[in-house]
Image 1: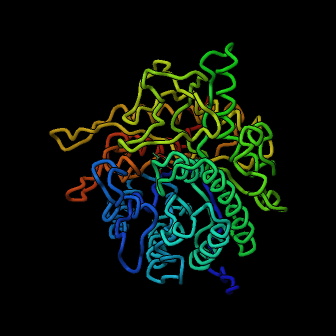
Image 2: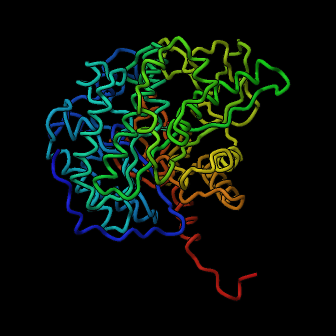
Image 3: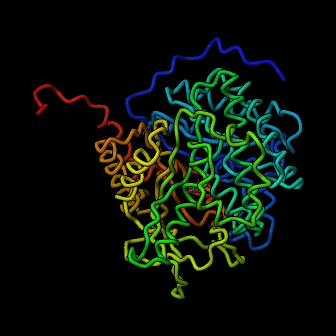
Length: 482
Ligand code: FCB
C-alpha cells in the first residue's frame, strides 16, 4: 500500500447553504483521447464499432476541455457557480490500468487548482462510464477483479488530489454502465447478455463499497454515489399487469441500486424476479456489508419519469429508452418481457424524454420518506437537450431549455419546503458535448460549443441560471421581510 497523503493544505470545508453547480464528464468533454499517455477507454473502442455512435462521431477532440480548462473555469465564474462536477478518466490516470500516469494526474491537478483559485468547489466523480479498454478485455465489470482494480485507481487519484478535493463520488449512474452497457448494448462495451449485466451491477456495487472504505481510511470527508432514479407510474393503476411492470421498473432502476447501499440488501422481489441470472453466486459473504458502508451524500440524477405498462406497445413509443442508432438493442428490464412506456401526452425534449418538472419534487420527497437513513441529497444532474438555433445576433434563445431548468429548480425548492434534505443542484451540462451513442447530435449545454471552432457562447438558459444563482444570494432587506 502506498503512503497516505498529508493533507496539510486542505481548505476548511465551508459550503454555502445551497450549492449551485453544473456538471460534465471526462469522456464527453475532454478530448485528447490519446494524448499525454491516455489510452483507450471502452468508449474510445466502442466509437470505432461501425454503427455504434450516431454519424460515426468519436471522442478524440470532444469539446477540447483538456486544453481549455482555464477558459471554461472563467465561464463557470461568469455564471457564478459554486461547484463544478466533473469526472476523472481512469484510462488517463492509469492507462491500460497499469502504472499511474503523472501527466494524466497533472491535468486534474491543474483543473482543481484553477477551480479553487476561482472559488469553485471541485466535485469529483471517479467513474462516469469510461473503463480502460484493457480491463474490458479481461471481462470488464463481469470480472470481480475489476472492483479491486477500481480501488487502486481511486487511491491513486486520492493521493494526487485528496489534499484539495473534498467531495468524492464513486460512480455515476451505475444503471447505465451496467444495464445499458451489458444488457441493452447501446452503450460501451456494447454487450447484450442479461447475466453479464447483473454481474456488472454487483461488481460496480462492490467497487463502490470497497472504494468508499478505502477513501475514508485515506481521509476523504465527503463520499457518495450518484444514481439516476425515476418515478415508475403504472399506466393504469387498476391493471395488475401495469402495476407489476411499474414495480419491476422501480426495482431495476431504483431499488436494485439504492437498497444494497442504503439497507445492505438486494430487494427480495427483484432478487426473486432475477432468479436464474446468478445473483447468489455473485454475492460473496461480506459483500453487502462492504457495499453498505456509510456515505455522506447521495447524488440524484433525474430527467424524466416513466409511465409504465405491462402490455406490449406497438405504437413505437418507448419513452426515450431506445437507442440512438439502428444498432439492435436488448432490454434493460432484466427478466421482464413486455415492459412498455406509453405516452401521457406531455411535451418532449429532443431526447424524446417527457417534460414533467413536478416529478423531481415527488422523487426527492419520496426518497427521504422511503429511506429515512439516507444522507443529504444533491441533484447532480438535470437538464434538457433541444435543437438550438443560433440567432442573427449570435445568441441562443433556448426558451425550452431555460423553462425546463427554471421549472425544475422551482420543484427542488418545493421539495425542500416539503422537508426533503436537498443541498444542491447541478445543471447537466455546462457545455454541449458528446452525448454517448447520440454523438454530438444532442445538445444539453447551457453554454453552446461551436464544434468547428470550439467557440463557447453562454445560451439564454445559462444567463437565466446565473441570474437565479445571483438572486438566491441576495439577503432581503429588513423592510422587504414579511
Ligand atoms: C445522464 C449521464 C450524462 C448525460 C445525461 C444526459 O444519464 O450521466 O452523462 O449523458 O444523461
